[in-house]
Image (cartoon, one colour):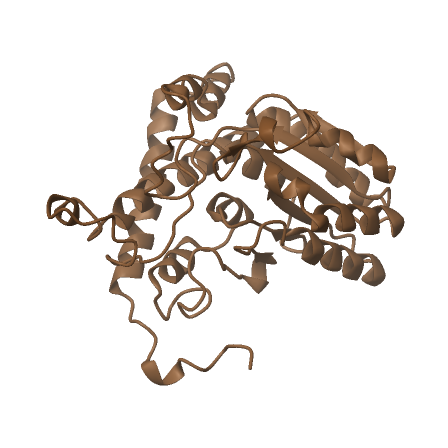
Length: 334
């Protein structure tokens, strides 16, 4: 599927937005957690600072999000993972409301009660979960609804390669194939399920081959390249919209940061991340655009726009109020 310059520019700017947003979030997250506590001989305090709790970032995995979401619209459903920001941004979730949710503020997507692993935006049909493999069943439900309504919408489930060993993966693929659902299953293969290498946990080299067990198409994208993902996803989304059923795509991507912020990453070979960063997909896409007349002035304009959006989102979150104590039991399941 041919990609236009306009679409390439959208992917480039969105990837930059994701990367700079997460780099900013990584800095803010550490506020109050170190170095003073470490200098006192205390451990990393995950509960301290303006953003307490775990934080999972996806720097390096931007091509998966933009390459798929470039084909989607507001009627399509995306269900993400515990590492969700790149999907949310690519799907169009408002940056200010998402950031406020991460800060636990009342102006957030879930009034500050969900945090970064539980982002819900009904208007953009986006959701995510902290449970491994939990994205696939809800995506099947959304795809079934779209099919029954005849809306032409599709549902996309993103998940990691470790989740492909969960029962929910196999049950969902079987159901989607049996009912010919307009679903696309996207496996992000960053080679690590938390700290366990794929080679020690998965019997097959590529999870794409597992599609054959359910009689559906399986595609393997071997490089962390936005255009390669775009081309593969374009075929899969078109098949889903045309009533041809689900597709499984596995993308070999790179995770530049730890499983969570504060992860010592002792399981990774020394120098691995430095080697991965030599093939950073954002400069690679920028270089491709250079061949289409893209110059320094346009690049600077994009980067300035990205930085302005990020500053505005974090200012909005910091200046928002926390939920009132009295509403602690509201907006939750009884």
